[in-house]
Image (cartoon, rainbow, N blue to C red; front, top):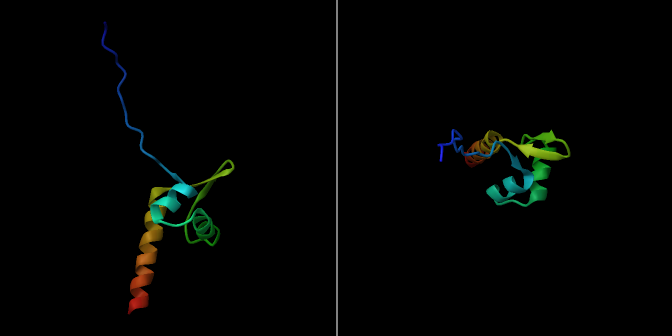
Amino acid sequence: MPESNVHATAVTKRWYTCAEVASMLGFGETRVRMLVLQGHLRSLKDGRSRRILPEWVDDYIATRVRQSLDDAQ
């Protein structure tokens, strides 16, 4: 049997749904959607769905940590 030239590649998630972000942050999906609507969490529309890039989740977390540290001072 000849050897195949097909290589297996791993697909990594490039963006998340609001539900996935809610699960990651321990929030409800409604709270994540409100954060998006209020401009606290960046997102984009993909058809009828809303998607959030991983770095935007990281940005939100970093902003919340900075705010928390500023409030503690």
